[in-house]
Amino acid sequence: MKQWYESLFENYAHKYDKECFVQGTAGECDFIEEEINCDKSLKILDIGCGTGRHAIELTKRGYNVTGVDLSEDQIKRAKEKAGEAGVTIDFQVQDARNLPFEGEFDVAIMLCEGAFSLMETDEMNFEILKNATKALKSKGKFIFTTLNGLFPLFHSVKEFYEAAQKEGQSQYKDCSFDLMTFRDHNTVVFEDDSGNKRELKCNERYYVPSEITWLLKSLGFKKIDIFGAKPGAFSKNDKLTTDDFEMLVVAER
Image 1 (cartoon, rainbow, N blue to C red):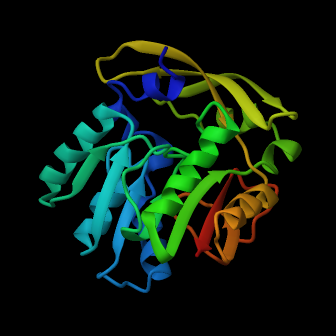
Image 2 (cartoon, helix red, strand yellow):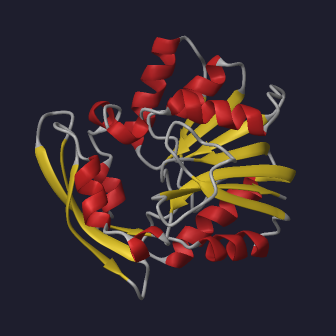
């Protein structure tokens, strides 16, 4: 049986690109460039690359990027978009829990809940972190965003989704946050690229900063910094607070 995150991205590439949460690509790539000192000799792996927005933008800026995603539909659209943008990128259908790379990349990015935190067990989510680490060279850097577990302790996830929803975009309903597992269970209602209304029961794992730090330390990362993640405007000046829906993690081996 297919998991919700596999079903969600079938025939949903064009509509996905119109969602409000994927509009901040240029600003997010500015942050990545700053983090890697604009070193165009570095090899970058984009995990859960979706329709390739970060990979395409970074390639246009002169970087060497490989993009991987579990969804064949998303990868197909990423290749189309790269063609439209006049860039050549190695896009591959891969499962982030079992990547074929070992010590090949200087930088791994995983943004906008591309893979991590969507899996149905904590063990599977950890496999993604493990595979990202394995793909990195010995002094590699890992930049990713994930859901901030401090947010639901102080705010209603349901109200957050309601405030963020825009006409013609996906809607979230029946949100319930489980304090024992730090998972939010919800139903997403959206229209696919053929105009069909679809409903899927989803659940996502929220992480608290201390968990992320411990997981990354156990994988051998020496320096781990966590910030508040403002889509489209990542900044190390944004201290993580309970008001941040997502956190931005920058880790170095």
